[in-house]
Image (cartoon, rainbow, N blue to C red; front, side):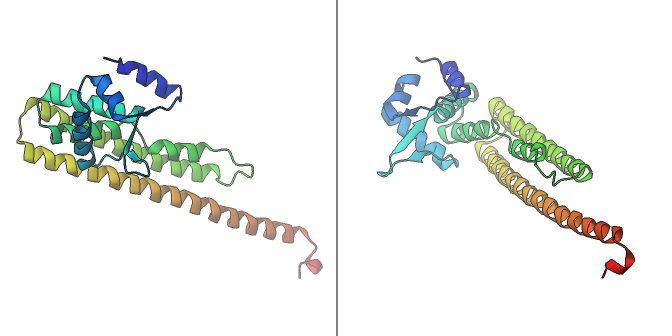
Length: 212
């Protein structure tokens, strides 16, 4: 069986791979029909695979890691396939942090320095607030996974909680998008304000008989 740790290294080095069903099957020692069955369950849980013009799935290194998470969930928690697929999807979502895109926008150096220090401070506070929300969502997801492993709740109730968690993830992404739009608006507004101040200043420098 192929060591999936090598996949992690390839991802870090930025070397993309396109895989087929038989590659996934060989990696995890399962049948190709099982790969297709697992892929259908992942799609049912909200996961999206790339597809070619013939509507055939094209797997990648990321998808391979998702299959690994699904298999681990089935083995460690002893849940059914659909439940394991939901767990795998949530674990994949936790690997990405949308707040990083906001931080990059805040730290981006502009030639004209459009965002003053005070505005940057306010934006940073908003970013910190969203980061706390993300951490809370991740803690809630981890609690759900722990409950799965302990088998303390019925599968129907757990499924409901997983769906609610995915809904919160989507709402969080929308909040991040709204905040990015607000940042752009503030920067544009501040630029207009600076121009008006400069015009007033230049006008004040002229003798009074040249101001009109």
